[in-house]
Image 1 (cartoon, one colour):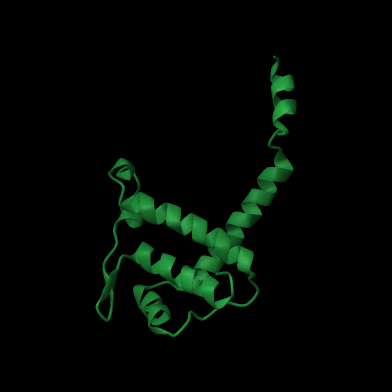
Image 2 (cartoon, helix red, strand yellow):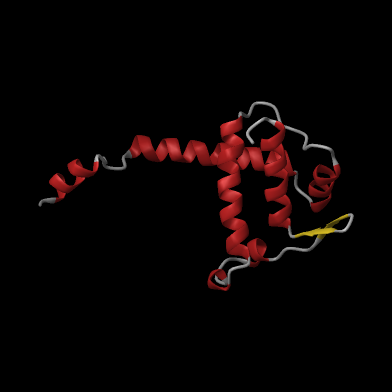
Length: 124
């Protein structure tokens, strides 16, 4: 079987420039949502966690939140995985955020805020 025969049997196609442009646009939207949802400081995360539901930024749809959730869960898991010790300290370091009796790392707090936003939007 040739490469072309294999590719056609899998129903896949080459990853082209248009695919890369689309992926880049999705990632930029994901980052923009994260910045809008979490703010720039741990106080912003704490404020979102203390609210009955997160303040939902305008201009985003449920699928944006679901996409962000996937990325944040991946980073959160990697931040505590010893195999990912090569990641920069800015990703791994996480001071505790205390909300009542609950204790969150920054990545756990971000995951929780996205989860609550998705729930509020009717995604679960």
